[in-house]
Image 1 (tube, rainbow, N blue to C red):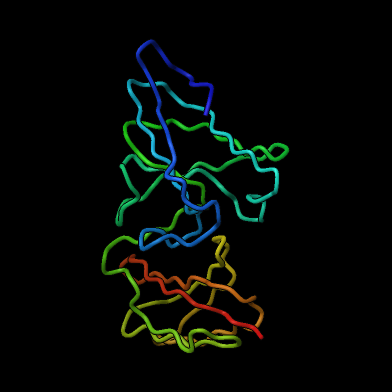
Image 2 (cartoon, rainbow, N blue to C red):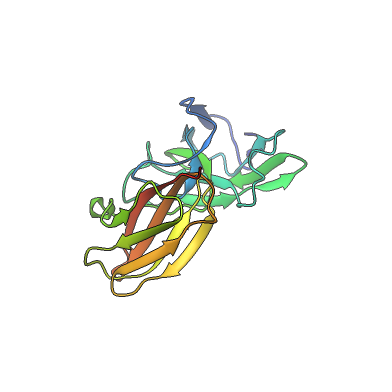
Amino acid sequence: MSEPSDIDDGEFLLWGTGNGDLEWAWGDDVFLSGRIARTWGYEETGDVGSVLVQVYDETGFLDNGVQPGIVYLENPTFELGLTPSFVPLTNDGGVWSANIDFTGLGVFTIGVQPVVNITEESKVDFLVYPNPASNKISIDFLGLTIEEVYIYDNQGKMVVSQLTKNGFVQIDISNLSSGVYSISALDSEGSFFSEKLEVIKE
């Protein structure tokens, strides 16, 4: 971080990391979208304005076809029901940058546009079978009013979008590579539901 836009004497922005993995992953019950496991905490004293956040990426880790950004929340941790802010990062020769105005006490990470669980009730609430699978899956939404279902890879990229019929759907996954995916759906009341899917190819 550098270049605060409005820093005066006695004003500070402190930040540090919890040293989580620098690997793309699905979050816990809070995030349905892709992010890295590592998070950083920050605390602002006074108002330093916006700061330049830069991520040096010599290996092309973030350049994977999905728009990365800084996901941040004015809260000590990412918690269920709280929707974080998202600022896209721009790439200039392997250096990803964004200007962000952190305020108060909070937490941030690197991820894609966040999709979060809204309530405790939005945990796993539909049946996917077989799971693990290799060619085709069936999904029974167990009475939920779901019109469309989405499958995301572990980088947060949507790889399947399919309409449902009478609370049930069959999906061809034969073109998906081996790995762990997230199946997500939105019900008629705006609540998110999610289930993990493991795809195994011989």
